[in-house]
Image (cartoon, rainbow, N blue to C red; front, side):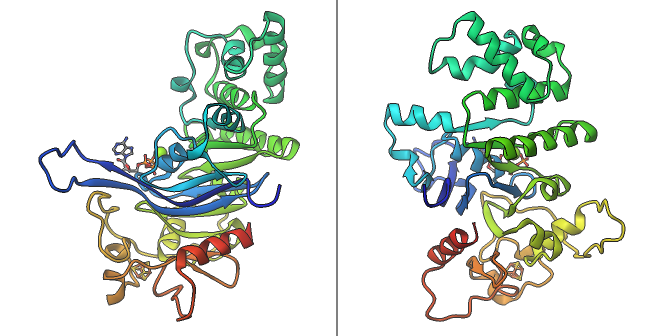
Amino acid sequence: MNGPLLKVENLTKHYPLGSGIFKKSIPVIRAVEDVSFSVEAGETLCIVGESGCGKSTVARLLMRLVEPTAGRVLIDGTDIAGLKKDALHAWRRRMQMVFQDPYSSLNPRLTAAQIITEPVENFERLGRNQRQALAADLLRKVGMSPEMTHRLPSELSGGQRQRLGIARALSLNPSLIIADEAVSALDVSVQAQILNLLLDLQQQMGIAFVFISHDLGVVEHIGHRVAVMYLGRIVELAPCEALFAKPVHPYTEALLAAAPVPDPTRIRLQVPVDGEMPSPINPPNGCAFHPRCPLAVERCRIEVPPLVPMADGRIVACHVRAPATELSAPPIANRALAQIDSIS
Ligand SMILES: Nc1ncnc2c1ncn2[C@@H]1O[C@H](COP(=O)(O)OP(=O)(O)OP(=O)(O)O)[C@@H](O)[C@H]1O
Ligand code: SF4
Ligand SMILES: [Mg+2]
C-alpha cells in the first residue's frame, strides 16, 4: 500500500457553548483548528502541548468518538467518515486506543481474560478455552504472567493495569494505536518499562503510534516525529531529533525551556513566556501565541501564520522564524500537506 497509513486533513472541532436557540451566533470552543498530519506504518508521531491545547480532542476525532466540524481522517487513503457498517467495523479493528487512567478505562467486574478478549468477541464468539489461550498469549506479549487471566483490575498494580490495557488494544492486531497520556499516571520506573514495551511491540509487530503526552522526556525517548500544538493548532511539526536539537517556533522553545533537563551538559534554552494559554472560546487574532511571544511583531497581531516547510524537513507556523516568502507559492494547507507527505 502506497501513501501514509493515517492522513489527517484540515481537522477542526468546535464545541458549541449552549444551545443558542435565541442567539444569532452561538459562541464555540475552538478545541482543534485546521490540523493536518500523516503517520506512516510503524511510525510514532507524538503530539505535545499545554493542557487544553486540543490533544485529546484530536485523539477522539481520530477514533471517531466525536464528529469533526470540518476536515477528514483517512486510513490507507479511505475517508472514515464515508464508511458504512461493515467497512467501519473492519476499520475499527485497525485502530485501537490506550487511555491515561487504566483503572477507570477497565471494567472492574471483568477478569483480565474477559477484558483482553472483549474487543475480539465483538467480532467473533470465542469458546472458553480459546478465550483463555488468547488472553494468556496476550498477557505474555505485554510481559505479564498468563496466571493472571483470572485477576480483577483491583487485584493488579498500576503498571500491570496499563499492560492489561495495552494487551486489550493488541487483541485485534491493530496497525495503529492511539495512546493518550498512556504512561502519565505511572511511576517513573514503571513508565520506562511500559515505554520500552511499546517500542518492542512496534519493532515486532510494525504498529504505528499516535502518542499524546505532555512529558517531553517521554516524547524524546519514543517519538520519530513530534507535532507541537498551541490553542488547537499545530505550530511546529518536526523529526524528533531535529526538534529537540533546535526548536524553531518560539512556543516550542518555551516548552523545551520549561521542561526539566535530565542531561546537565545539554544547554537549556532560556525563553521567557509569561501568562497562561488564552481561552479557546475567544482566541487572540493573528498568531494565537502573540500575547505571550517575546518575538511578536505587528503582523503577528493581524495574520494567522501559515505552516511553512523548512529546509530540514520540518514545518513551522511563525511570521518571524518561518516567513512565507515565495509569492507564487501554492495555498499553504496544500504545501504543508505535501511537505508532511514528503518527510513521512
Ligand atoms: N466535550 C467537550 N465539550 C466542550 N468543550 C470541550 C469538550 N472536550 C474538550 N473541550 C475543550 O476543548 C479544549 C481542548 O481540550 P482537550 O481535552 O482536547 O485538551 P488536551 O490538550 O487533551 O488537555 P490535557 O493535556 O489537559 O488533557 C479545552 O478547552 C476543553 O475544555
Ligand atoms: S508569528 Fe509572531 S507571535 Fe507568533 S510565534 Fe511567530 S513571532 Fe511569535
Ligand atoms: Mg487530554
